[in-house]
Length: 202
Image 1 (cartoon, rainbow, N blue to C red):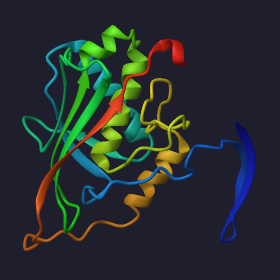
Image 2 (image 1 turned 90 degrees about the vertical axis):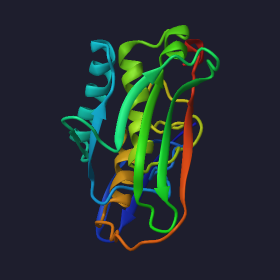
Image 3 (image 1 turned 120 degrees about the vertical axis):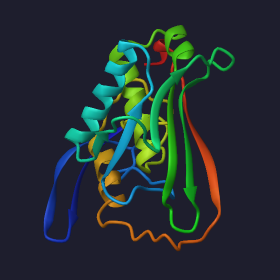
């Protein structure tokens, strides 16, 4: 269902626009983040096809205010793909290791499931949407609502980065994090998944 809404925040008016009722206005966040709204990454892809997919997704986030920077030889954030033929229900996943006390990211492994994306006929632009979604998890975004118009829709195939996702990113990175080398806390790894979407469902 679609609704029309006008909101007011402080003295600023939000222009009336069409909003899907089950889309969070601000995409929620995970408990981890980088220090600033920028981070280095290293692309481990061996094919030019997936290098192009990741490059398009990176550039989309950069144009929306998160400044991914390419590392020359290594980085705590890596991008790649894998043959997940044993689970074709998963389009992509991100393995995030972080400090539970501070939220500081220790490492991010960002992955696309080549087998599932091929089996369900994802176009190159749809694979870019999945890559944008997984990069959203890497920078600290959680899933928006099911059926939301958001790159962070938990079963997204059709949507690139939306205003709600940019607002979510800005909410996380409104101020720099105050990480310290003396910070203590459990270091855990969390895997977030994105579900596959059969083409007939969109």
